[in-house]
Length: 364
Image 1 (cartoon, rainbow, N blue to C red):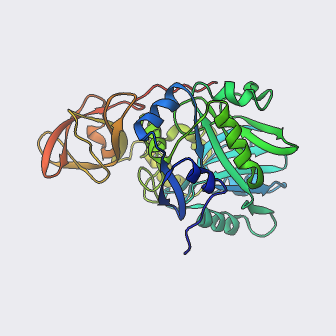
Image 2 (cartoon, rainbow, N blue to C red):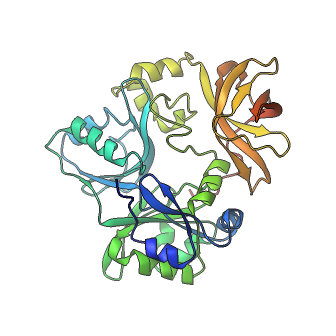
């Protein structure tokens, strides 16, 4: 399959981006300043991310949509308010996660943001589940960019008036150069910020204005370190089709009504997890010293019994230390528990810790 490029590819190239293939796209992993500097700029100023490789799905509502969609998405869609966003999942019959996604209630239905590597399969699953009576569009003519960091509001407000009135996980329609765009106050860095859906034809001019106002283009490398410091999952690494939301420590994303009433695929498995029938849990892990425990690193108890593995690990620039997440046997998940990590054949001390590693700065 031919590798795809976003509408901002040439702009990234002009800025000196280093590219990597990611989910079928040629994406910028970093620019000339490097990953650590880009990470710090997002935490202190404002970072601009191209996330146009992700899927933007629209489903037009009718009287049956909410009932059918709630069978595969364990979110309280009956009580979601207009322009409200919810973090959720596409669930399989075993309670595993086909994908994690953001669902937003819009005037004529629902917008759903899908992960890039999953979007074609997600589209098929959703279409097969809902049948042919719904208008379902996986948009190809829209880009998605994220502006993240403490200066994000100031920069965006200087271009789009009243965007500062948005609260966290809420969105609305706005206009730029006579084009309707949709902006949500959301993101995946742990910082305040916005995700902006806009036509491909105007995304480069819009990005250039954001940069002229002080936003710094940021690549996938810093996006990964930022989300890991914030304790956020990366699909295909920290969660997948064999992981339930409860094992992933994401019970909060399933509303109380849905946890009690069920009515969605995999409910029996998820309910049993909630009731204590759970063998493993995603936790934060702080390795001792300077070792970096990458994905796949084996985790051992103090008596050297294997108890799990790392799913994400890196150096956290904002916490100035090594951080990781992984799944370990439930008996060892209490924060403060001492464990061992096997890196290059040697075992190193580490500690189970609370998530996130870095305090989130959302505007609620």
